[in-house]
Length: 612
Image (cartoon, rainbow, N blue to C red; front, side):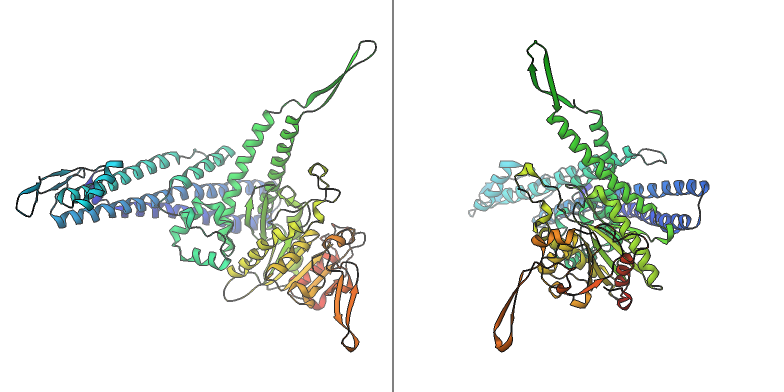
């Protein structure tokens, strides 16, 4: 990089090229949305048979190509913007140094050397000869800079300027080299089918780009620990191209930000889903090829006649391998369920699905909406209970598609969104003897609920923040089993940002009465089915306080001791809804009164809810 080349560099040509690539990014994003909403959805709703299936397969291939195009062109777009910004900064430093050199009358050659005249002493003698300062670095650089403070003169000033010019040239050279290397790696395979190998390559490209593109979409600028309102304000302050760059380079981080528009989070999380699916499949394939020996020798016994009996058991190595296999297969099953829900858009009138959260940390998490909550008149957020993880996503997603169908049918002319919030680490009902935890399963502990509560509150606050400014959605929180405990903990740690709370088979909400939930007694609804053992099993651990203190006759304090209260107790308050299902898992059975009663609350038709 030379002085003249950097000084005269037209970074606007790079930003213009970036704008061209941004057009491709938008084409990919809008193309996928168009195929999903205008082509696939009507096809699934109206046509059946082999021809319809073949057409759906081809259209899905187009949608996949659009998404792959959006992701890969987004990286090129971000790279060109980052290159332009970093080179512009280096050019600005160079030009400032050149202006200063000109003010001193120092000539600067194309390599960055700075000429300077002789320096005269007070008596007119020559103190410093005229000469040329060339860019220095390292210890010499700092030493010469220090000399300028002690012995100011033309040579020291020129040396400082030469160092600044040299640093600007070196920065521009390093930037150009780094971005050239990054862009060379953004090469896509030819073809129509988007294979797992291509998604794995996209994951590698994303990792490379996120660490090498520094001039735009700085990861450190992404809000951390901010409120949904602060997240929304940060996002709104970005230009369209900056938003596109962040979505391309940091989808995992953007997808988690409560308060951002649903469509933005969906775009980010779909990218994460695609690359994670490819990564998990690659890891699982490699794992299955490397299965270790299952049986290992554990003991050998010699009988009286000299014969030996050898016993075998499962090796520790195989146990670790099998645990990893089970985790990977479970997470891929969850991804299949999410993709399956995407593919159901239009079937039986189901609206488009939006992925509001996704990761594979631990057992994995996902948040999925039926319909856009940003524009919905009624929104329901479902918090599932014990054992919730990515591997079991299909059942929880199905419950909310059923609830959407019932709710939508009960609210003609209004829009509904039902959300499955698998956004926390749920406890299990298994007793982990090997962890020295005694005889009580994790599901008896309120620790998991308190850990999940802040995230649930932030999520519901984010829904309210992202909703259209001209209206506010009527929001219902629905908790099944331990999910109701999470809602109870959230009510004690902040606002639920909800209008109604519905619980089903609750083991306790850590509060002793409905009024403690912050939505008012008349907006708390409980379902209890015959044969559901969970309320009584959870009561001693997660129920409300056993002591009520009041003021009796003549102002004498009263103390009423009773068993811990759960929502299905009439004494808890709120409404006891009628239920016609059996056991702990039937509250969302097709055609059930239990499901219809929930839908009636979701759409605000309180007077039609069946009560005990």
